[in-house]
Image (cartoon, rainbow, N blue to C red; front, side):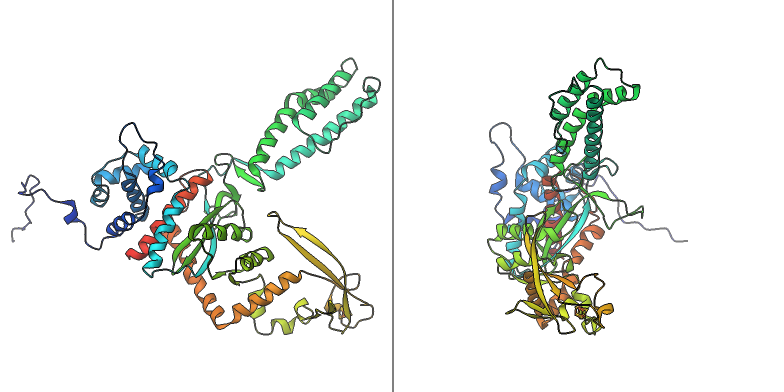
Length: 508
Ligand code: SF4
């Protein structure tokens, strides 16, 4: 049997020259990309956040590099970053052997980068534009929901508040009516309070009046108990509801552990029970799978997010993209108008665009309102039997964002005895259709865009451009839940994740 041979192993070997970390970092390692890119941007905005005086601080350039490189390596915890800065030669080289602790790292991330990270993000995107990696002319926009760092079971629901307030109103009304019946004299001259709108002070005063009126009256035990309960709880509860409604704003829910997080349906449903979870709605715009813009929203659907997202793009780059490509989740009158006002060409599907594209869809639905001829001069639609449908009125609707749209109603003259009636409509009256002409025209234009050769190419590219970014951050980067709480901090976190994603694309 041969004697095994081993390579020399000597932990106490003395080196003539101390090793340099620089030599140990491969020439094309991603850490060099992070170093080079952060070195080439202007970080004055971060430096201005330091008050000056006192003891020395770790350099923000070093801390930013360490954070971005940590996010590039799926390290999100400040304690793990602290450890990496002492153990990992890439981190040690990047940080120039500085060893900030996790408090410093966390404070830098959640305080110093507030309102600044997006500007830094944009500077890096502009570098990528210069180097030809990405273009700001065309953007693919889509959204995903990411779970908040919040308890899944402690929540406040707007509907529950409304129901509780209604219950208080009803019971207060009953108490008032009872008191008027048994203590009419004591309640004399008292006009009943307006129970439609109640607040803590009004309820407190009303209960005090009722209590005073019933003071010497023989009232049954359960009513006395109800009155005592009301006195003790209702004013305080109403005050609490008022504060909760302020936090809710336009939302219907929020988490008690992160009040900025809204309960929404997330794709990640490990319990497979469709349970709503606290989360944030992340919207991104991409080109060549590089993220050019991101915004965090508290709404549960994508439709109402586009205007704010476009505003953010304009603020970052002082220009609008030339074209925006999205899926059908964004096809609304409000969004089409926002795109038109900004001079952006819309490649934004509306909800039944895909159905329409199926062979023979419109031919098989001859009564669909799109098949009705519209005579703009006379403002009439012509129904399949050739009857003129005249305008019988209009109304204005307004959504949560304050966007208004005018809906016009058109009615057929006489459907009685029409042989097509069964197939045409199920209304009891002569057929009425409701039309938003502005939206009708937008859809016409968008349809032409989408079915053009350019539109077909964009539609083909969209799922390969923006959606892989979500797959990358959620599956490869394992970023499925925020670490920080509150919208401003979540914005920082997501900015770092997307910055790391962009750098990993050019480092690859
Ligand atoms: S049912 Fe009324 S609207 Fe429909 S085709 Fe007949 S006449 Fe026209």
